[in-house]
Length: 405
Ligand SMILES: [Cu+2]
Image (tube, rainbow, N blue to C red; front, top):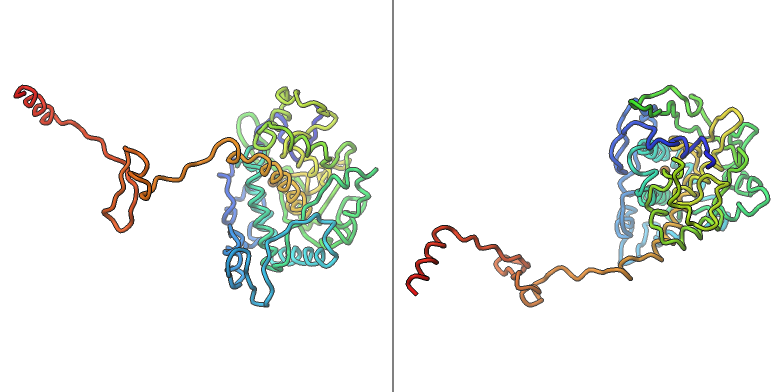
Protein backbone atom coordinates (compact mmCIF):
# COMPACT_ATOMS: atom_id res chain seq x y z
CA UNK A 1 0.00 0.00 0.00
CA UNK A 2 1.36 3.35 -0.94
CA UNK A 3 2.32 5.49 1.97
CA UNK A 4 2.48 9.22 2.16
CA UNK A 5 4.86 10.93 4.51
CA UNK A 6 2.83 13.81 5.75
CA UNK A 7 -0.41 14.78 7.45
CA UNK A 8 -1.75 11.43 8.45
CA UNK A 9 0.91 8.99 7.50
CA UNK A 10 3.26 11.02 9.63
CA UNK A 11 1.86 8.63 12.17
CA UNK A 12 2.59 5.68 9.97
CA UNK A 13 2.30 2.49 11.92
CA UNK A 14 2.22 4.40 15.16
CA UNK A 15 -0.93 5.22 16.98
CA UNK A 16 0.37 8.52 18.11
CA UNK A 17 3.19 10.80 17.45
CA UNK A 18 2.64 13.53 19.94
CA UNK A 19 2.72 13.74 23.68
CA UNK A 20 -0.38 13.07 25.67
CA UNK A 21 -1.66 16.56 25.71
CA UNK A 22 -4.86 16.16 27.61
CA UNK A 23 -8.38 15.06 27.10
CA UNK A 24 -10.33 15.94 24.00
CA UNK A 25 -11.93 19.24 24.66
CA UNK A 26 -12.94 22.32 22.85
CA UNK A 27 -13.59 25.01 25.40
CA UNK A 28 -11.19 27.40 26.99
CA UNK A 29 -7.73 28.39 26.01
CA UNK A 30 -5.09 25.78 25.43
CA UNK A 31 -2.79 25.56 28.43
CA UNK A 32 0.54 27.28 28.26
CA UNK A 33 2.57 24.22 27.59
CA UNK A 34 6.09 24.91 26.52
CA UNK A 35 6.32 21.50 24.92
CA UNK A 36 3.84 22.47 22.32
CA UNK A 37 6.09 25.08 20.87
CA UNK A 38 3.45 27.62 19.98
CA UNK A 39 3.60 31.12 21.32
CA UNK A 40 0.38 30.91 23.26
CA UNK A 41 0.47 34.57 24.16
CA UNK A 42 -0.12 35.39 20.55
CA UNK A 43 -3.77 34.56 20.35
CA UNK A 44 -6.97 35.73 21.94
CA UNK A 45 -9.99 33.72 23.02
CA UNK A 46 -13.24 34.33 21.19
CA UNK A 47 -16.17 35.60 23.24
CA UNK A 48 -18.62 33.15 24.75
CA UNK A 49 -20.99 33.60 21.81
CA UNK A 50 -19.18 30.79 19.98
CA UNK A 51 -20.54 28.35 22.55
CA UNK A 52 -24.16 29.06 21.54
CA UNK A 53 -26.14 25.94 20.78
CA UNK A 54 -29.31 27.52 19.48
CA UNK A 55 -30.73 30.48 17.64
CA UNK A 56 -32.07 32.22 20.75
CA UNK A 57 -28.63 32.23 22.33
CA UNK A 58 -27.10 33.62 19.15
CA UNK A 59 -29.76 36.32 18.95
CA UNK A 60 -29.28 37.36 22.58
CA UNK A 61 -25.50 37.41 22.33
CA UNK A 62 -25.77 39.65 19.27
CA UNK A 63 -28.04 41.97 21.29
CA UNK A 64 -30.94 41.22 19.03
CA UNK A 65 -34.61 40.99 19.94
CA UNK A 66 -35.67 37.37 19.97
CA UNK A 67 -39.32 36.87 19.08
CA UNK A 68 -39.52 33.13 18.54
CA UNK A 69 -38.10 30.45 16.34
CA UNK A 70 -35.82 31.95 13.71
CA UNK A 71 -37.20 35.42 14.34
CA UNK A 72 -34.55 37.78 15.62
CA UNK A 73 -34.21 41.46 14.89
CA UNK A 74 -30.78 42.95 15.25
CA UNK A 75 -30.14 46.46 16.54
CA UNK A 76 -29.52 47.72 13.00
CA UNK A 77 -33.03 46.63 12.01
CA UNK A 78 -31.87 43.64 10.02
CA UNK A 79 -33.10 40.15 10.69
CA UNK A 80 -30.70 37.49 11.82
CA UNK A 81 -30.99 34.43 9.61
CA UNK A 82 -29.94 30.89 10.07
CA UNK A 83 -26.59 30.39 8.31
CA UNK A 84 -27.01 28.80 4.91
CA UNK A 85 -23.72 27.23 3.97
CA UNK A 86 -23.14 27.50 0.22
CA UNK A 87 -20.44 26.23 -2.04
CA UNK A 88 -17.57 28.74 -1.91
CA UNK A 89 -17.63 29.45 -5.65
CA UNK A 90 -21.38 30.11 -5.63
CA UNK A 91 -21.11 33.03 -3.23
CA UNK A 92 -21.88 36.35 -4.84
CA UNK A 93 -18.90 38.65 -5.15
CA UNK A 94 -20.29 40.69 -2.28
CA UNK A 95 -20.79 37.63 -0.08
CA UNK A 96 -17.29 36.41 -0.81
CA UNK A 97 -15.76 39.80 -0.04
CA UNK A 98 -17.64 39.97 3.26
CA UNK A 99 -16.49 36.48 4.10
CA UNK A 100 -12.85 37.31 3.36
CA UNK A 101 -13.07 40.58 5.26
CA UNK A 102 -14.47 38.91 8.35
CA UNK A 103 -11.70 36.30 8.28
CA UNK A 104 -9.14 39.07 8.07
CA UNK A 105 -10.70 40.86 11.02
CA UNK A 106 -10.63 37.64 12.99
CA UNK A 107 -6.96 37.30 12.13
CA UNK A 108 -6.17 40.88 13.12
CA UNK A 109 -7.88 40.42 16.47
CA UNK A 110 -5.78 37.27 17.04
CA UNK A 111 -8.91 35.22 17.55
CA UNK A 112 -8.13 33.33 14.35
CA UNK A 113 -4.88 32.24 15.93
CA UNK A 114 -6.81 30.96 18.91
CA UNK A 115 -8.61 28.55 16.62
CA UNK A 116 -5.28 27.49 15.23
CA UNK A 117 -3.75 27.01 18.66
CA UNK A 118 -6.77 25.09 19.90
CA UNK A 119 -6.67 22.63 17.03
CA UNK A 120 -2.93 22.30 17.43
CA UNK A 121 -3.33 21.53 21.09
CA UNK A 122 -5.78 18.71 20.55
CA UNK A 123 -4.17 17.34 17.42
CA UNK A 124 -2.81 14.18 18.93
CA UNK A 125 -3.90 11.67 21.51
CA UNK A 126 -7.16 13.42 22.21
CA UNK A 127 -9.36 11.44 19.85
CA UNK A 128 -10.18 14.30 17.50
CA UNK A 129 -8.12 12.70 14.76
CA UNK A 130 -7.81 9.09 13.73
CA UNK A 131 -10.77 8.04 15.76
CA UNK A 132 -14.53 8.20 16.27
CA UNK A 133 -14.64 11.78 17.53
CA UNK A 134 -13.26 13.22 14.31
CA UNK A 135 -16.61 14.18 12.76
CA UNK A 136 -18.41 15.58 15.85
CA UNK A 137 -15.40 17.46 17.20
CA UNK A 138 -14.72 19.21 13.93
CA UNK A 139 -18.44 19.93 13.59
CA UNK A 140 -18.35 21.91 16.80
CA UNK A 141 -15.00 23.49 15.90
CA UNK A 142 -16.18 24.93 12.59
CA UNK A 143 -19.52 25.93 14.11
CA UNK A 144 -17.58 28.06 16.56
CA UNK A 145 -15.51 29.55 13.78
CA UNK A 146 -18.65 30.37 11.84
CA UNK A 147 -20.20 32.09 14.86
CA UNK A 148 -17.00 34.06 15.44
CA UNK A 149 -17.31 35.30 11.85
CA UNK A 150 -21.01 36.05 12.31
CA UNK A 151 -20.21 38.10 15.38
CA UNK A 152 -18.26 40.34 12.99
CA UNK A 153 -20.80 40.16 10.18
CA UNK A 154 -24.10 38.37 10.97
CA UNK A 155 -24.87 37.90 7.26
CA UNK A 156 -22.03 35.42 6.91
CA UNK A 157 -22.32 31.65 6.70
CA UNK A 158 -19.33 29.35 6.44
CA UNK A 159 -19.04 28.17 2.82
CA UNK A 160 -17.90 24.69 1.89
CA UNK A 161 -15.48 23.68 -0.84
CA UNK A 162 -16.87 20.99 -3.13
CA UNK A 163 -13.52 19.65 -4.28
CA UNK A 164 -15.11 17.26 -6.80
CA UNK A 165 -15.57 20.22 -9.16
CA UNK A 166 -11.85 20.87 -9.11
CA UNK A 167 -10.92 17.22 -9.24
CA UNK A 168 -12.60 16.75 -12.64
CA UNK A 169 -10.37 19.40 -14.23
CA UNK A 170 -7.40 18.17 -16.28
CA UNK A 171 -5.25 19.89 -13.66
CA UNK A 172 -7.04 20.97 -10.47
CA UNK A 173 -4.23 23.44 -9.80
CA UNK A 174 -5.69 25.56 -12.59
CA UNK A 175 -8.90 26.06 -10.64
CA UNK A 176 -10.06 29.59 -9.98
CA UNK A 177 -9.78 28.60 -6.35
CA UNK A 178 -6.09 29.52 -6.45
CA UNK A 179 -6.45 33.07 -7.71
CA UNK A 180 -6.41 36.45 -6.00
CA UNK A 181 -10.20 36.68 -5.93
CA UNK A 182 -10.50 33.44 -4.02
CA UNK A 183 -7.92 31.70 -1.84
CA UNK A 184 -4.92 33.27 -3.54
CA UNK A 185 -2.02 32.16 -5.69
CA UNK A 186 1.44 31.03 -4.64
CA UNK A 187 4.96 31.80 -5.81
CA UNK A 188 7.47 29.24 -7.04
CA UNK A 189 8.25 28.23 -3.49
CA UNK A 190 4.62 27.72 -2.63
CA UNK A 191 4.23 30.88 -0.55
CA UNK A 192 1.01 32.77 -0.88
CA UNK A 193 1.57 35.86 -3.02
CA UNK A 194 -1.91 37.12 -3.81
CA UNK A 195 -5.43 37.14 -2.51
CA UNK A 196 -7.06 38.20 0.74
CA UNK A 197 -4.63 36.38 3.03
CA UNK A 198 -1.33 37.05 1.24
CA UNK A 199 0.00 39.21 4.06
CA UNK A 200 -0.79 36.78 6.85
CA UNK A 201 1.87 35.73 9.29
CA UNK A 202 1.02 32.29 10.57
CA UNK A 203 1.55 31.08 14.10
CA UNK A 204 5.02 29.84 14.72
CA UNK A 205 5.04 26.14 15.21
CA UNK A 206 8.45 25.06 16.22
CA UNK A 207 8.68 21.41 16.85
CA UNK A 208 6.98 18.22 16.14
CA UNK A 209 6.85 15.30 18.46
CA UNK A 210 8.25 11.94 17.74
CA UNK A 211 6.95 8.85 19.42
CA UNK A 212 9.78 6.46 19.96
CA UNK A 213 9.34 2.91 21.17
CA UNK A 214 10.21 3.68 24.74
CA UNK A 215 8.95 7.16 25.35
CA UNK A 216 7.55 10.26 23.84
CA UNK A 217 10.24 12.75 23.26
CA UNK A 218 10.32 16.18 21.82
CA UNK A 219 12.61 16.30 18.87
CA UNK A 220 13.75 19.54 17.45
CA UNK A 221 12.24 18.88 14.10
CA UNK A 222 10.92 22.12 12.71
CA UNK A 223 7.83 21.39 10.73
CA UNK A 224 8.22 24.80 9.25
CA UNK A 225 10.81 27.45 9.51
CA UNK A 226 10.65 29.66 12.53
CA UNK A 227 10.13 33.33 12.17
CA UNK A 228 7.65 35.20 10.10
CA UNK A 229 5.93 32.79 7.80
CA UNK A 230 3.45 33.25 5.09
CA UNK A 231 0.92 30.59 4.24
CA UNK A 232 2.46 27.88 2.13
CA UNK A 233 0.87 25.44 -0.32
CA UNK A 234 2.48 22.81 -2.53
CA UNK A 235 -0.61 22.19 -4.63
CA UNK A 236 -0.74 18.73 -6.13
CA UNK A 237 2.88 18.00 -5.20
CA UNK A 238 4.05 15.32 -5.26
CA UNK A 239 2.23 13.82 -8.20
CA UNK A 240 -0.54 11.47 -7.22
CA UNK A 241 -2.03 13.68 -4.54
CA UNK A 242 -5.60 14.39 -5.43
CA UNK A 243 -8.84 15.87 -4.16
CA UNK A 244 -12.03 14.17 -3.02
CA UNK A 245 -13.95 12.80 -6.01
CA UNK A 246 -17.59 11.73 -6.29
CA UNK A 247 -16.66 8.09 -5.92
CA UNK A 248 -15.28 8.74 -2.45
CA UNK A 249 -18.48 10.40 -1.31
CA UNK A 250 -20.72 7.75 -2.85
CA UNK A 251 -18.83 5.02 -1.05
CA UNK A 252 -19.34 6.68 2.28
CA UNK A 253 -22.99 7.52 1.76
CA UNK A 254 -24.07 4.19 0.30
CA UNK A 255 -22.12 1.89 2.53
CA UNK A 256 -23.48 0.67 5.81
CA UNK A 257 -20.13 0.22 7.42
CA UNK A 258 -20.28 2.52 10.42
CA UNK A 259 -16.51 2.49 10.65
CA UNK A 260 -16.30 4.62 7.54
CA UNK A 261 -17.68 7.45 9.68
CA UNK A 262 -16.78 6.67 13.26
CA UNK A 263 -14.05 4.13 12.98
CA UNK A 264 -10.35 3.86 13.20
CA UNK A 265 -10.04 2.11 9.85
CA UNK A 266 -7.50 4.68 8.92
CA UNK A 267 -5.09 3.18 11.38
CA UNK A 268 -5.55 -0.19 9.83
CA UNK A 269 -4.82 1.26 6.44
CA UNK A 270 -1.77 3.06 7.73
CA UNK A 271 -0.62 -0.07 9.44
CA UNK A 272 -0.98 -2.02 6.23
CA UNK A 273 -3.70 -4.22 7.63
CA UNK A 274 -6.66 -2.94 5.73
CA UNK A 275 -8.07 -6.40 5.01
CA UNK A 276 -11.35 -5.45 6.63
CA UNK A 277 -11.89 -3.03 3.78
CA UNK A 278 -11.00 -5.35 0.95
CA UNK A 279 -14.62 -6.21 0.40
CA UNK A 280 -15.28 -2.73 -0.88
CA UNK A 281 -15.58 -3.25 -4.58
CA UNK A 282 -13.70 -0.92 -6.77
CA UNK A 283 -11.22 -0.10 -4.08
CA UNK A 284 -8.49 1.84 -5.75
CA UNK A 285 -5.24 1.30 -3.96
CA UNK A 286 -3.45 3.74 -6.20
CA UNK A 287 -4.35 6.18 -3.50
CA UNK A 288 -3.29 5.51 -0.03
CA UNK A 289 -6.29 6.86 1.77
CA UNK A 290 -9.63 7.13 0.10
CA UNK A 291 -12.06 5.17 2.20
CA UNK A 292 -13.26 6.76 5.41
CA UNK A 293 -14.64 10.21 6.05
CA UNK A 294 -11.48 11.14 7.86
CA UNK A 295 -9.16 9.62 5.30
CA UNK A 296 -10.78 11.32 2.32
CA UNK A 297 -10.46 14.59 4.16
CA UNK A 298 -6.76 13.84 4.51
CA UNK A 299 -6.50 13.61 0.72
CA UNK A 300 -7.36 17.28 0.49
CA UNK A 301 -5.03 18.27 3.30
CA UNK A 302 -2.33 16.49 1.34
CA UNK A 303 -3.30 17.98 -1.98
CA UNK A 304 -3.21 21.57 -0.72
CA UNK A 305 -0.30 21.31 1.69
CA UNK A 306 1.73 18.84 -0.28
CA UNK A 307 5.42 18.32 0.01
CA UNK A 308 8.18 19.88 -2.06
CA UNK A 309 11.41 18.31 -3.33
CA UNK A 310 13.13 19.18 -0.06
CA UNK A 311 10.44 17.29 1.85
CA UNK A 312 9.07 20.53 3.21
CA UNK A 313 5.37 20.53 3.89
CA UNK A 314 2.80 23.19 3.25
CA UNK A 315 0.61 24.32 6.13
CA UNK A 316 -2.37 22.15 5.28
CA UNK A 317 -0.27 18.99 5.29
CA UNK A 318 0.31 18.82 9.04
CA UNK A 319 -2.11 18.77 11.94
CA UNK A 320 -0.12 21.40 13.73
CA UNK A 321 -0.12 23.97 10.97
CA UNK A 322 -3.27 23.16 8.97
CA UNK A 323 -5.56 25.73 10.58
CA UNK A 324 -3.06 28.45 9.67
CA UNK A 325 -4.46 28.28 6.13
CA UNK A 326 -8.11 29.40 5.89
CA UNK A 327 -8.67 26.70 3.26
CA UNK A 328 -8.90 24.42 6.29
CA UNK A 329 -12.37 25.68 7.14
CA UNK A 330 -13.65 25.40 3.57
CA UNK A 331 -12.54 21.79 3.46
CA UNK A 332 -14.07 21.03 6.83
CA UNK A 333 -17.29 22.66 5.73
CA UNK A 334 -17.44 20.07 2.95
CA UNK A 335 -16.50 17.19 5.26
CA UNK A 336 -19.20 18.25 7.70
CA UNK A 337 -21.69 18.40 4.82
CA UNK A 338 -20.85 14.82 3.84
CA UNK A 339 -21.19 13.83 7.49
CA UNK A 340 -24.60 15.53 7.57
CA UNK A 341 -25.76 13.79 4.37
CA UNK A 342 -24.77 10.49 5.94
CA UNK A 343 -26.50 11.33 9.24
CA UNK A 344 -29.74 12.30 7.55
CA UNK A 345 -29.94 9.02 5.69
CA UNK A 346 -28.95 6.92 8.70
CA UNK A 347 -31.40 8.08 11.33
CA UNK A 348 -31.32 5.33 13.92
CA UNK A 349 -34.38 6.56 15.76
CA UNK A 350 -36.52 6.54 12.63
CA UNK A 351 -36.01 2.89 11.92
CA UNK A 352 -34.23 0.96 14.62
CA UNK A 353 -35.58 2.20 17.95
CA UNK A 354 -37.25 5.02 19.75
CA UNK A 355 -37.85 6.00 23.36
CA UNK A 356 -41.06 5.91 25.38
CA UNK A 357 -41.56 9.05 27.45
CA UNK A 358 -40.16 9.10 30.98
CA UNK A 359 -42.65 7.87 33.62
CA UNK A 360 -45.02 10.64 34.67
CA UNK A 361 -47.84 11.08 37.16
CA UNK A 362 -50.63 11.66 34.66
CA UNK A 363 -50.34 7.99 33.72
CA UNK A 364 -51.95 5.70 36.33
CA UNK A 365 -49.36 4.50 38.87
CA UNK A 366 -46.75 6.08 36.67
CA UNK A 367 -47.23 3.18 34.28
CA UNK A 368 -45.94 0.33 36.45
CA UNK A 369 -46.83 -1.53 39.65
CA UNK A 370 -43.26 -0.89 40.77
CA UNK A 371 -43.69 2.87 40.62
CA UNK A 372 -45.84 5.39 42.49
CA UNK A 373 -46.70 9.04 42.12
CA UNK A 374 -45.27 11.16 44.90
CA UNK A 375 -47.76 13.89 45.77
CA UNK A 376 -46.03 15.03 48.92
CA UNK A 377 -44.02 17.81 47.39
CA UNK A 378 -45.06 20.80 45.36
CA UNK A 379 -44.46 19.02 42.14
CA UNK A 380 -45.77 15.57 41.42
CA UNK A 381 -42.98 13.21 40.55
CA UNK A 382 -42.83 9.50 39.85
CA UNK A 383 -40.81 7.48 42.30
CA UNK A 384 -39.82 3.87 42.49
CA UNK A 385 -41.21 1.66 45.28
CA UNK A 386 -38.84 0.63 48.05
CA UNK A 387 -37.70 -2.85 48.97
CA UNK A 388 -38.91 -4.47 52.24
CA UNK A 389 -36.17 -5.98 54.36
CA UNK A 390 -37.36 -8.69 56.77
CA UNK A 391 -35.64 -8.27 60.14
CA UNK A 392 -35.07 -11.18 62.55
CA UNK A 393 -37.85 -9.79 64.73
CA UNK A 394 -40.27 -9.74 61.86
CA UNK A 395 -39.32 -13.29 60.94
CA UNK A 396 -39.90 -14.42 64.54
CA UNK A 397 -43.32 -12.75 64.61
CA UNK A 398 -44.14 -14.42 61.34
CA UNK A 399 -43.25 -17.81 62.82
CA UNK A 400 -45.38 -17.11 65.95
CA UNK A 401 -48.32 -16.21 63.81
CA UNK A 402 -48.03 -19.51 61.97
CA UNK A 403 -47.94 -21.43 65.29
CA UNK A 404 -51.07 -19.69 66.55
CA UNK A 405 -52.85 -20.68 63.38
CU1 LIG B 1 -8.42 18.49 12.56
